[in-house]
Amino acid sequence: MNSNTVKNDTLVNFLSSLIFVILFLGISILLYSCKSESEVITGGGGDDSVEKSLISGQVVDRDTGFPIDSALVRIFGNTINTVLYTSGFGQYSAEAEFENDESLLITVYKNGYKIDTSSAVVVSGEDLAVPLVELSEVGGSGNPIPSGDPVSIFLSSISSTTIGVKESGSVETTRIEFVAQDSVGVPIDSSHAVAVHFSLGAGPGGGEFLSPAEVMTNNYGRAVVNLTSGIKAGTVQVIAKIYLANSTITSLPVAITIHGGLPDLTHFSIAPALLNFAGYNIFGLENPITAFVGDKYANPVRPETAVYFTTTGGIIEGSALTNPLGIGSVILISAEPRPNHPVFGEGFATITASTIDENSQVISKETIVLFSGIPQVSVNPTSINIPNGGSQSFSYFVGDQNGNPLAGGTSVTVDVEGEDIVAQGDLSVTIPDTQSPGWTQFSFLVFDDADTVNVRPVTVSIETTGPNGSALLTISGIGN
Image (spheres, rainbow, N blue to C red):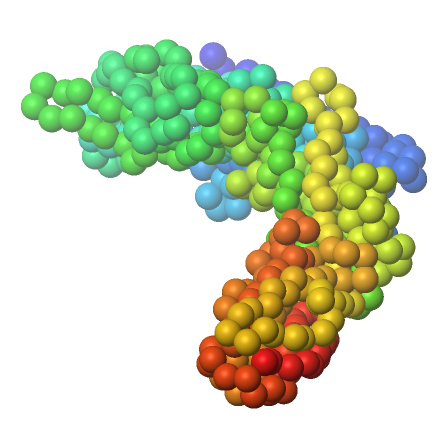
């Protein structure tokens, strides 16, 4: 081959690369400029409930496995259209808010390399780890650098660090790539290929599995395994091992989170912090209401599942997002309207929690909260006349104006005063957090403790103090 031919080939390669860059940037500018206003991401006025997703990845040389610096990366989708460059470690990242799951087109270019285009799906509110991008040189040999025997194996890339349980509506499989290297950090080549064995470490034990269980490294020392979830949520570890004649090479465990599925009515509950709070007449009191949401396998649902709340009394926060335990709470506030239940009557409110199941159907659960009112005290009989050496019985009521029990923590005391007079019964009571009318009715006996015909004055005082307020009733009479 003469020198003119070599020069011509070099010129052709240079012009080809230049044309690639011009076409790529031109198409990017054209597509971006043609986006409608509704597709432009703005910095304000958005929905604060939508969390940002971090899109990140790495670009390496296919032949050497080394990171590629300053490679141009374009991430394009319905919500995002951005161009950025890789760092000295070949890494790139971008943040955006996605209201729904979205498919992205990721194009990577570097002068002297072939353009690479791939796709990935970002889940709303979750980070996306883009699979490793390997660029091939234009006119390159396509052969890796010769290596030695493997001495280490570690995680190279992972498609997602979070997956959902079986039939959860989320991605159920993640792709995990390990790379084996020799003593100087070069990925092992095909002449030093070894079998990589994959196993699960700690995990929920819900039927999650790896496929394949064993694979040979490729020309670049890489071995890929897929983890598929089972029916239980939790964190699972994936471990790669290489068995040599005299030693075993083991990777660090790679942790993957398996989250729960969609809400299931059987595993849906709602409970108030207080069954009874003093909100019928006192406004502005707060009572947390909590929903507990699980999927059909009894796992906590996927984090940030929305639960909606309504009330027939007072006011309540409209919605909550579940935490990793499937729990979401709102605040019920005492205010108008005062509740009136069709069965239980004045003071009882129905609190309803609703969410969406896997069939896109609304499912709901209810709980009852008592708004108790102003303390009332009454006693029967209302006069005292204790026979000589005998006794007199009394029954008394402590509750609110609607006949309902007072709030938990209310104290009730009965004080009897009189010479040679003794009392027994419900003389000191603390009301628990209850809606039961049984905690409104009490009784006691008053005895004439001495055998005498002298008439003595007797006074009985019944007092209640607690979150609802205070009340006092006093009656008087004689002991014979």
